[in-house]
Image 1 (cartoon, helix red, strand yellow):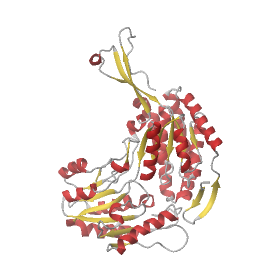
Image 2 (cartoon, helix red, strand yellow; image 1 turned 30 degrees about the vertical axis):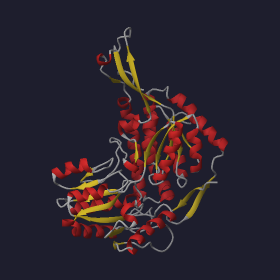
Image 3 (tube, one colour; image 1 turned 60 degrees about the horizontal axis):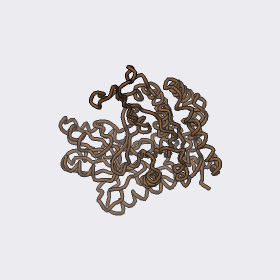
Image 4 (tube, helix red, strand yellow; image 1 turned 90 degrees about the vertical axis):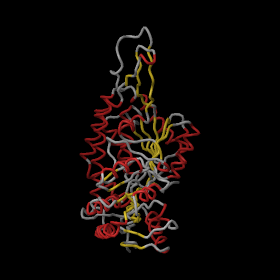
Length: 471
């Protein structure tokens, strides 16, 4: 049986365990979610907006308790968890407000296609399976759930097995907000059940945020079943610093960008590519900032970096750092896990990396930064793009011409110039190369799981034009 449990990463103590669903229970959950879709697709967008706004209100009202559960389950700082809940409420309200616009009929050039009327209509497709990770246990789900539910789809959540309380909590929030019973359903199952779920004809699509192997597995199953997928996979994001950059600000943001969520973020900056003219100055500032961060109890508001989510994850991060050090890299700060309970790892900066070291090409999922020295813009782009990933990217330069070149030349789904990569409901989010495909958030994220329907009307049609329909 899969191990579905809340284990406090700060202590290693198992706090609560759950039994995985039986095959019969899982089938019943899929049936309820499919029946809910048949109800939800016939509701108005205004009705769904009222429910979504009610869900946002519940998140705001219960923010502190929800944040405590997230911190207990995966170790993010309580302050960060509170901010995550608030962000989810903001996204819920965004989609409640924007859905009528995003789902409105789009008129086409009727004369060009020899029609009286022609337009595009966006309609829901059914039950969407969401396979979600533990690192942002509420936000990763909400950025799928809010647009999917507002479009009239229903959601079936298979969350990471170490955050079951967060998963069940979100199901309860949508139910109490007024959505039909089963519109958003959490299934407590292990990863081995995903193939069965996605093979069920009542499930029409899937979205996954997770590892590259998990993405390949989902894509393979969905391809066989001819079902749409959106994949947001790993990243090894570059953070490029050029001579004209504001070094103090760049080093400050670099510290946050690397250690946000205890360093466990797909879009955390991981490879710091610094022009040789400012390399030493930046490295000194950056390492000092990283070393000054406070590691400790994630419930303490003064803590900057809490524990990693699992012992296995902490050990893997340390193995990557040791591999680099053993092969000649220089560790400027950190590099040794503290003794005692919990799966903590100190903020670490490593330089003098070579292609023979794991850190050169692998994603490090913890508060560890790799520094790379380059001598030109062209070399910076070569190193930045020299990875199989292409999720987020950062570039620091006050040169307008360089800013324009970075926007074009960085091979990533997101380019942030003079700022930290993050996600906003207003902007599409996703990657290229082995970081996946498809987009979350914005209008694009809502329409990923819609039937983009062409409607062509010939002679004899009523005179009413497209545009009134908003489903």
